[in-house]
Length: 250
Image 1 (tube, rainbow, N blue to C red):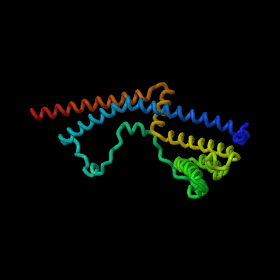
Image 2 (image 1 turned 60 degrees about the horizontal axis):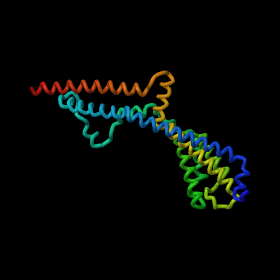
Image 3 (image 1 turned 45 degrees about the horizontal axis):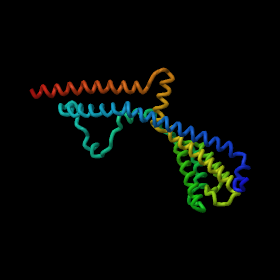
Image 4 (image 1 turned 30 degrees about the vertical axis):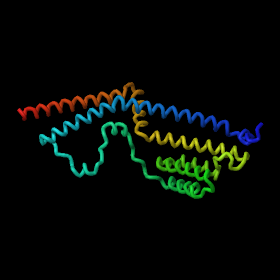
């Protein structure tokens, strides 16, 4: 047996950890692929309709302002150059919830973790990189109010303080510790990526679509139908305004 592999082979945790990491990587890739397909489908089927609706509404607004049926836009709002969310954005953003304030326990765990892993305390480049990675995961967990994940990060650090991912850093004797630390940190990073996905608008839309499908109806088809109905109403309104404009000219 090669001497450099002995520490890894003797660590009983590695087979289970490596299998768990492989499973989680596959799961993450599958979820990302599914969300990308849904997003592509959504903008192909719904996005173009919203573009059409937006153009119709713009023309309707111009004529209504011309006929004094609505006030002109606020010039101060135009100067601010802030775009209002489109209906498409609103659909994707549906279901957003305001996060609660962080609890005292969450703040305490985050402070303890931040003190322990602050990158300025790193002894070298590889350790600084590891601290930066863990700090990024800690910030993400804090933003998600995920105290359990913060505690996992803290425990991972306490088990392997200052561990480096550099394979030549401390000889063959530390390779098992480095491998375990690297896998555990990647698992934490994957948890963070899942948390980001779960907070995204496209994830919430997928959840609503899945819930609707379980009840026997197609939410995306309903969205398409509703936008088409709005297009029909805006088209009729625009035609009426144009007829009014034509009658005034004749």
